[in-house]
Length: 71
Image (cartoon, rainbow, N blue to C red; front, side, top):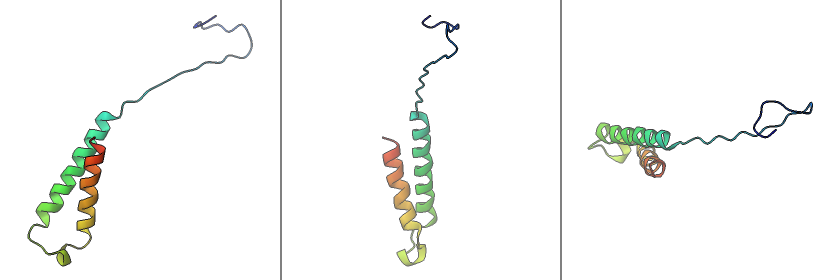
């Protein structure tokens, strides 16, 4: 019986499909990365590259991640 709860044989098979929409999570992640980027800019404003260390690479990763995630 199609769509019924009773199976005439001892083996029952079913198929279920789900679809998850990640657009909200992607936008939340883009916002989070943009905020991290902004904080890095504010905390390191006016400093030379020698003074900020690895934060330049982190900042670039935050910006690229925000752009790609938010698309």
